[in-house]
Image (cartoon, rainbow over all chains, first blue to last red):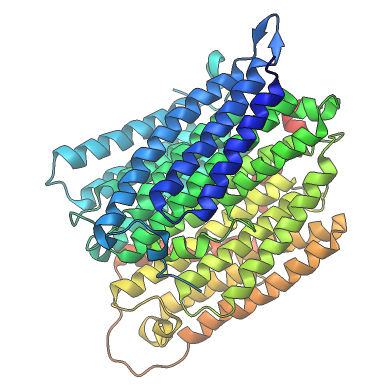
Length: 105
Length: 492
C-alpha cells in the first residue's frame, strides 16, 4: 500500500537532488534542469497532499489546479531562460558559471 | 467598468505596444513611450475614479480577488512606479539603445506594463495560487528586462544570475506552498488563518512549509540569507530596470509578505511566536548585511543596491513589530508608508545616475565630484534624495525609519533594535559620502546639460520628498484604513 508518506519522501528526495545539483554543478544548462526538478518535486508533493485529502470520496482539487499553473509557468520560464542562456553562449562561447564573474565586491 | 477590469486593460495595451513594435518598425521610441505613459496615467485616473470596493467584483472572482484599501494602495503604487520607469527608460534611451540587439528599445516599454499588471493582481490576491501566477508574471518579465541590453557584458551576466536565482526561489516557494497546503488543507489566506487558529494542524509540517514559503518570498524582497543576487543584478541591469527591481519588485514581494504574515500571526495562531522571531532576526541581519558592504563601495549604483537590501531589512522589521499601535498604522500600513516614501527618493537617486551617464560621466563616486558647480539644482535635489534615504529629519525617509524603530522599542525586540540603529547610523555615513563628493570642487570645463522634462520631473520628486518629510499626515490617514493583523482575513 502506497501512502502519503511515500509520495512525500520521493518528493523530498527529488527536491534535495535538485538543490544539490544547483549548488554543485557548474554548467548552467544542468543547473536549469535541476531547477525544473525542484519544481517537479513541489508538484508531486501538491498532488500527493491533494489526493490524500478526501472529502465525500473526492480529492481536494484546489492544489491540483495549482499544479497546472506551475507546469505552465515552468514552460514560460524555460522559454525565457534558454533564450538568455543562448545569448550568453553567443558572447562567451561557454555556459559555465565560472565565466560570469565580472562583477564582484 | 469596474476596478477589476483595469489589469486586463493594461495587459491589452502591453500586447498592442508589443505588436506595434513588431509590425510597424518605423515607430519611434518616443511614440512607444508616449503611448505607454499615457496608458498608465489613464489607468491610474480610472483606478481613482471608477467604482471600487468588493461589490465591484463579479461574483465568480470573489473567492480569489479582493479590493481592500491595502490592495488599492499597492495597485496605485504599481502604476506610479511603472510610470516613472517608463519615463526613465525614455530618458536613458540615447545611451541604452547602443546596448540592445537592434538599436531599439521596443520591449523595454511593453514589458513594464506586464510587470505592472502582475503587481496589481498580486496586490489583490486572496490565495496562494493567484500569488504564484502573478508573482511569476512579474519575475519572468524581469528576466527579459534585466538581460535586455545584452550587448553590455554586465547586463547579460546579471540576467543569467537573476534567472538562476529567481528560478531557484520559484522552486522553493512552490515547495513551501505545497507543504503549507498539506498542513492546513487550504490555499487561501482565509483558510490558512482559520487553520492556524483552530489548532488541529500538524505544527512541524506547517513550520516546514512556512520556512520554505518565507525563503521563497525572501528571495524576492532580498532578505538575508537570500540577498546575494542583489548587488550584481542591480549593477548589471540597465538603470530603469534597476529602479523597477528596487521599488516595484520589492513592493510586490512585500504586499504578499504582508498578507502571508497577517494570516500566520493572527491572534491565537499556533506559529505566531516562531514567525515573529524569524522575521525579527532576518530583518535585523538584513539591515546590517546590507549596510556594512555599502560603507566601502565606490560604485554608486552598487552602493544603492546594498542600501536597498538594508531598506528591505527595515521593512521586515516593520512587519515583525506586530502589536505596535503608536502611530495608528498597522504593520502592513507602516510597510506601505515606508514604500511610498522610498519611491520618490529612489527614483530621484537613479534619475541622477542616468543624467550623469547622459553627460558622459560614469557611476563611480569620483564621477560625482564637482556636480554642485556644474548643476547646482540637480546636486541639491540629489542631496535631498540621499538625505531622505539616510533618514534625515524633515525628509520623507525619516518617519518610516523612526516608526520602525519605535515599533521595535514597543515590542522589546532589543537585538533587532540594535541592528536597526547600527544600520541607520551606517546609512548616514555612506549616503553622505556621495553628497560630500558632489560638493567637492573639481577643475573641469565640460558643461552639464539636462532636459526640461527631466528637470521638471526631478523637481516634482524632490518636492514630494520635502512635503512628505514635513507633513506626512495625508498619507498616514490614507493608510490608517489598512486593517491590522487578523481583522482583514477573519473579520473578528
